[in-house]
Image (cartoon, rainbow, N blue to C red; front, side, top):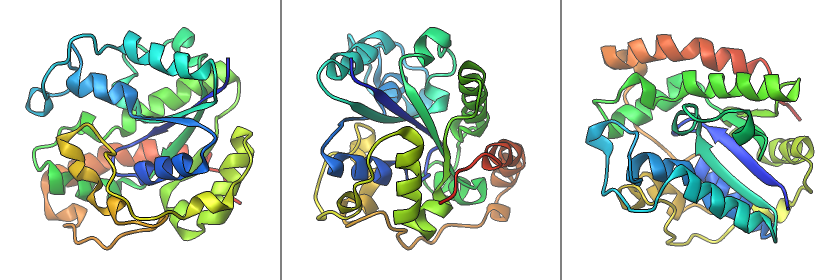
Amino acid sequence: MQRILALWCVIRSRSTAFERMMEQRGDHRCHHEPFGDVWYNGEQPGCPPQRAQNPTPGLTVESQLDRLLDDARTAPVFFKDMAEYVVRFADDTFLRRFDHSFLIRDPARTIPSIFDRWPDFELGETGFAEQRLLFDRVTALRGAPPPVIDAEDLMADTPAMVAAWCEAVGIPYVPEALAWQAETLGYSWYEGGSWHDNLRTSTGLEAPPTDYLPVDADQRMVAAHEACLPHYEAMHAHRITP
């Protein structure tokens, strides 16, 4: 059985661009949010009702876990996913199947992006409390904090941060994977992949121009930021640096 690398993220944290980099390496079988697919499209969706898509017979946590394990029989596996999709069932048995790392981002940057797409977003959809809870569980299981990278550090010095993450998780650094050709790829099963429009035209881990409202423009964002910030700060204290 080969290793399964799990990157636990919050929504709008550059995670799919990171996944694209892992695909570019060519040495891992990559899965896009396997448990998120269950959350939105599974036999029993766990998402808020207004987000649910068409329930898919046979799409369950168990079926997605089997897919990861089947691939790991012949090759190393990488997947990224959001902690809020798994905390309800992520016991020690589940967590021991993976080698974990975490991608965090300042909620002052993620929340406006969420609000732009979902002005009715719920606090649980930001994912910060759930990410910290999962981080604490993994830390207790490992006896030490798992690797944490901050999305802003990643954008500020991409080669150094990717190299530091690779060292932390025990895989070779492949600088050639930091650049790719712009392609029209199906990055997501959610809303036709429209959340990843910028990634389709990207050629590397880069920050696209945005024009989102600031957090203080709406009370829903203000309240969410106040609730999320302590969780981000607690994990930020453990972030790796080059």
